[in-house]
Image (cartoon, rainbow, N blue to C red; front, top):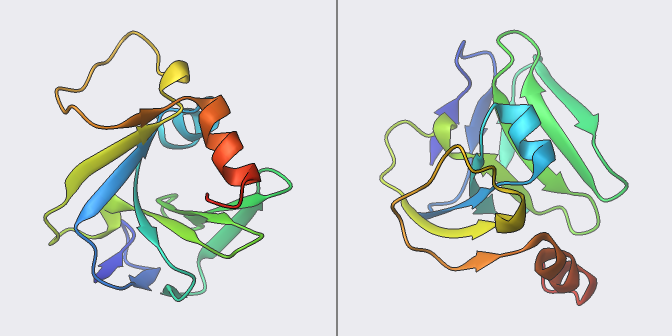
Amino acid sequence: MKGTCLCGAVEVVAGDATQIGLCHCSMCRRWTGGPFFAVHCDDKVQFSGAALKTFRSSEWAERAFCGTCGSTLYYRLVPDGEYYVSAGLFQDQAFELASQIFIDEKPPFYALANQTPTLTGQQVFEQFAGGNG
């Protein structure tokens, strides 16, 4: 899969994917203006462009954005290098919403029609601590 930020200053190349996950945590909502729709990619994602900027949002994760247009690019887990790339970068892909996390932090002002598996924040951290996330 290939994609770009809004202005085209940052390009991304990732392996093919058909599913996306959605994060309702307060940090993702503050970062994106809503839930974060993400493609779970491995650690072999390639980004190019001098406008890529990163922000270490916690001891275990960093977030990236385009320094020119501000587009959300990715959330990366530092310990294993796994990327969660913004689904909006891939304009020609047909994705299926497969899961939602931090469902306990979802505000009441929106609802999705999709019925997907969900995890609370505590369940996400338990999986991460167990080496599964």
